[in-house]
Amino acid sequence: MVARRHGRTGAALVAAGLAGLMACSSGCSATGTTDDFLPTDPVELLRRAAPTLVRAGSSKARTEMEMATGGTRVTIRGEGVYDYGHQLGRLRVLLPQDPAGTSEHRPITELLAPGALFMKNRGAGVPADKWVRVDTATLSDGNLVTGGATDPFTAAEVLLGTREAEYIGETEIDGTSVRHYRGTADLTAAARTATEGNQAPLRAAAKGFATSEVPFDAYLDDQGRLRKVRHRFSFVNGTRDGTIAVTSTTVLYDFGVHVTVRLPRSRDIFAGRIAAD
Image 1 (spheres, helix red, strand yellow):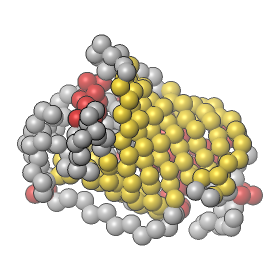
Image 2 (cartoon, rainbow, N blue to C red):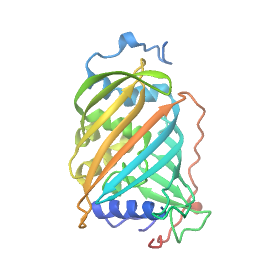
Image 3 (cartoon, rainbow, N blue to C red):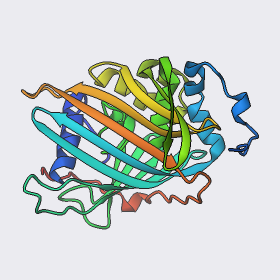
Image 4 (cartoon, one colour):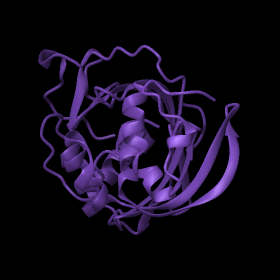
């Protein structure tokens, strides 16, 4: 894989990215919106999830991505912060142990920005002080999967494409009462109304996955803020294993936390090739 330009497209690039990761392996809101003003229609409510996060400002985030292909199941976890107004985030992604359970891998630091993903400790051949930059529009999954964590704001903007949804009931997440919704979103529809930085990545994902339809479970608090979302993606990896199933879960909490994300300078970005794992 080339750090600045990525010639490979389609499921092969996504599979390669995943393989690399495996081998490395109540009250008012700030705007005065209360429960009384939330839409009663689940579809409309979920389509408003992303703009509501922008009004919330920022939060901490936990991510979990589980990938299953053939008889292999791998889970990658991350934790960090996100600024929804500027669409900037920072995650520390923990890679799974090798099958023997003996090797420990350095966490990957990921910086998330509109249209770009920056990774440190990405793989062999990259100097320790350098970042790898990926143009997310060139990835056939729009970076919903390749980075080992779904960008929290992109996860919310997938819900812009909600086609159908139903209310399941009330539950709690980390002691907060939330409402559980289940539905299906269309990535092509989401791309049409997404913010500028997410339009091309979501269009790429709509073409790159096995289907543009994404089943999801979403949990919103009484201010309409997304507290948890679980997406189920699938793509054909072009090998004998066939389809890779991916479940991506994002949990958001501590809204309003201070977030500072400094993107790498040009001279700190690796321009060579990443060695094969």
